[in-house]
Amino acid sequence: AGAQPPARARGGMTLAVPPGERAHIRVFAINRATADMAQLLKRHPIPDVARDLLSAPHLDTASAEIFPLSDLAGVGLTEYLSEGYTVDDATLSPDRQKLDALEGYVLLLFSDSFAGLPAALSIGPSLTLIGTYSEARPDMRARPLSSDAATLYSGQLAQDAPRANRGMGSVIVLAALVIALLVWWMLS
Image (tube, rainbow, N blue to C red):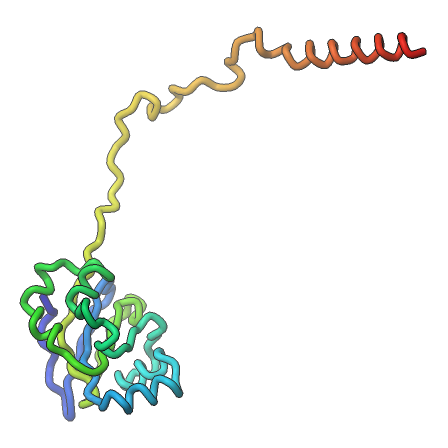
């Protein structure tokens, strides 16, 4: 399910991000009034609001998502993470009730915000970390090819084409030239 619990810091918690982290999504509940968040997002772009909420001006939050959970009516946050980001159902299962009971706005923060570097974020009272979830990653290892066509030097090269086809272009050109000369001779 989630990562190790974050350490408590003065006035909040410290969230440690390991170096080289890939394909993780951190879900935060935003502890601000819905109307205040709506106004804030009208005045400022999401990446700026995300950096402000995280008190991390150095983060690249271009991929962060902030949205009201009312946008997911009929779907729910668990389903959104499962279908939209291929987070395994077994990973979400322990937090399903908590995720689907959230109200107001949420912040989704992705691993790419850290660019593979370690980080320590001091999370203030505006955010509550709900959980950190891993996206399923397909097996990208190449399987060896077993076809005879995949064997090195097994294909037929153009220079090995039958000799009968090689001179066909010149025969056509010669025939066209003869026809043109005949037509010219008959018209003159």
